[in-house]
Length: 112
Length: 116
Image (cartoon, rainbow over all chains, first blue to last red; front, side, top):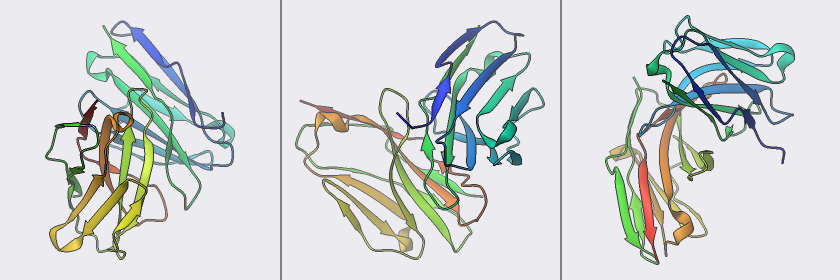
């Protein structure tokens, strides 16, 4: 399967702990996105990379969140000092410059 | 600001019925894109269609059809002869026509249940 893959699929953590999610995009896609989806809502844009450069960040991305895409391949999204409000599905997507967004199956975070 | 409204939170129909999912959008841009995505229980968003704001032609793809009306800012999605496999949450989304990020603004989604 050559789609977007995310790991882990599920993460349960205690409040205050740090968590990291990984996204492997479709190999020929140079654009990578992170979205967040809370229960019963549509996804919300968090941040965007073109190759290794992080070009845009949403105001939703507080300073406890950091995303990286070293070498323009896979990306990581780290949440420090997690809060219960961080509980959500974190979706990664990738695209070519003019193509559609292809989404992964998401990483579900539960903060206790 | 851009906004997408899907007023129907949940729809339940019997298999083989036709069903229409409504989508109304707001934007100040004259050039923009509209999308529909399907989210099955596995969680992965599956792309269904993209339309740009200059193309108001209706589109048909198998049992799926889309009706884009700029005059009413609507982009409705119809499934003809629905099947149980169509059960999912469907999202309508909007993005500005920008060479950079495809920052999609999603509606809240419509949960569609097709009963056998």
